[in-house]
Image (tube, rainbow, N blue to C red):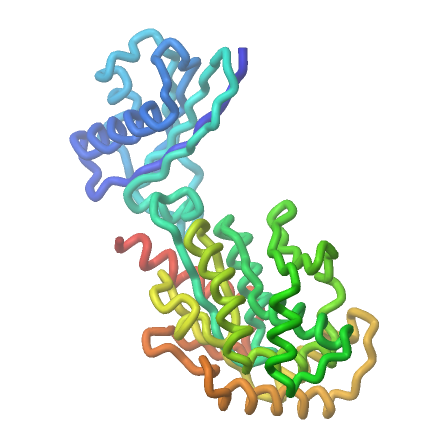
Length: 343
């Protein structure tokens, strides 16, 4: 026999016996239906409720459904400041003879607890200039929400790396396109971490130099390059909840993204961050040259004819100049969770 534990949660609008019983019943029925569970497979169920729920025990719903011989236990969820209100959680233990693809269930406003398991795909677009902290924040968001992080900039860097290694003139757009058309570029995930595979080789650790960054800005202006990479990005986003950062995610790549943010910071702050990042990686670089490089990249990105860097009209602007990574991450998560709770 194989033992599984299935999680689930839901919320109620009011602390009333009817609401608690109705929402708990729906949650249990959904867990049972999605996991093809027979009552005889259920070993036990633990219910928890937030401290603002005291009108009824949620386990009563299970008894009313006919689970009279199954051990049930109710307790109060530990209170954490700012946590989801009026929430009922379930931990159902089952035992079956065959392996099962377990499906955890989060309903109503409890979807905010595990957006990666929601029925709808959640897409978060984070745009902004170089050095604004987009990648760092996007990774933190993806980790917190347990969804994929797609580093689009790494894809352009990989193309630039290939052109530099092949001694291709970046001003010869047709030659760049011809080389890319013969290149096998893939995005893979290893334990949630993105890997860029080019022609069968993992180049993830080779594409973070200043030379590659400058070249990436140039290849990104070539429409044919962008079209090919955007197709890959949109295909991944159509199948997975994810965070995507770049220059034109909210305006072009994912114009219908669930959430859009425009992250910026002063030029001096961005240069300092990039300098510290490179220094931490053992790369010595003059901060003024980094500042000039970022400034030039800003100009290239903002003035390219195809999908330039700009703020989407419906994006939330966040200036990270005087904010820590944690502060910016929490600010973005606050917007996302606040909206999901309203939904």
